[in-house]
Length: 191
Image 1 (cartoon, rainbow, N blue to C red):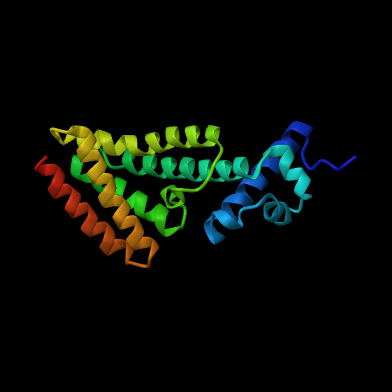
Image 2 (cartoon, one colour):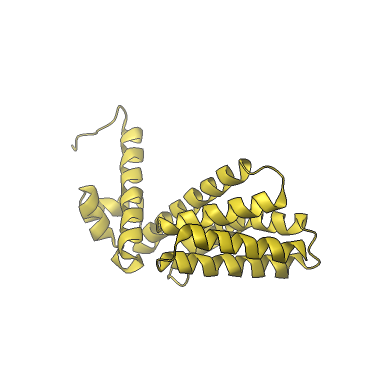
């Protein structure tokens, strides 16, 4: 019988699952989706490869859990930034952009994983999470009284995604954030 490392079996399993996901995220961020295999995560976690399958039946499920973790962390950062921004549209734009770029600087931005093969259930869940992360930007666009909310939101997201790419490729975060915020503030003030 394996030794449990928590007061109960359920707590032990939860602790192990968290460790598996944390190590999957670390691998994903450091080395990309191709490096995220059950065997690699098992080695990092100190488990047998077959033990990882007790928590995630497939490599795709494991990758989906790691990506979901990144989305949830990104959403938490956005929520905290926007909660501190108040109701002014310009302040909310700045908070949204800066939180998004800070997430990208840490290598935790979930959109850098676009195109990764995932099981259908994981893709559906990640679409829900993407919609949650995008909702505050859409709310900013609505508050700016844009005539076409969907198009304006997509264009604003495109600008932010461009800034994410710059930061991921080594551009100065502060300068990129300042320029992106200014661009979006100007664009949304004329919407």
